[in-house]
Amino acid sequence: MTLKAVFFDAGNTILSLDYAVIVDALKRQDFLVDQEEVWRAECRARVKLDPFLAKVTVRESPEIFSRYVRYICEEMGLPWGEKAERLLQELREINRHSNLWRGGAVPGAREVLGDLKGNGYQLGVISNSDGRLETLLNEVGLAEYFSVIVDSHVVGFEKPDPRIFHWALQRTGVTPNEAVYVGDFYSLDVVGARRVGLDAILLDPLGVWPLLDCVKAKDLFDVRSLLPASPSYR
Ligand SMILES: [Mg+2]
Image 1 (cartoon, rainbow, N blue to C red):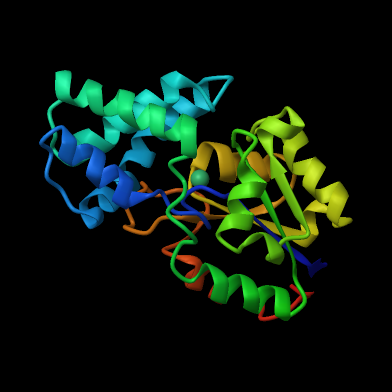
Image 2: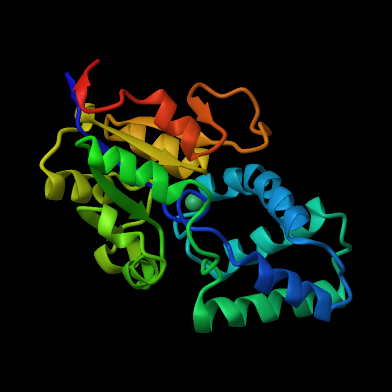
């Protein structure tokens, strides 16, 4: 069996939240925190959000967005009240107009994607998004690395639905056991990928996920080190 392709989630995997915009929005509600604090809070918030993502049928929803913002605030020790509600509304508006995932490529993305592609891997993105994923990847200069970009809003299926993974596999011409999937939410990314027979790697930058039955990586450099340098038998 040969590992030929690596598929990636988008948000928090290769695309960063726009932490500068979030910090500014927090400041307007008198919450003074820095980008590092928001990032760390977000890494923990996703562990709390995961069980809800596992239960609902629509993931790109206002309810999930609210919960996500609320958990990030909780993890920063910010009280939930009128100010936080105003923050939520503002972030929702920003996300609607210009997308909160405009923070650019995550650290290491260009280097790692460039290496993997240069060494012969096929690369793809499979993301629960809102129809703007490909534009966003073009804007930050990441689109060129991928032979397939799958946006749930465009294809009509969200992770962990097997159909979104099959869509990408068919377009790259690889079988599930020839590919691995990298993402940051256990219930969507790891469970979803495994359901179709893909191996999965969970990104866990702070090592805060509980003990799980999957391989974890703290960043994309870690992911690269877990893979054979080039497509090869394993
Ligand atoms: Mg993600």
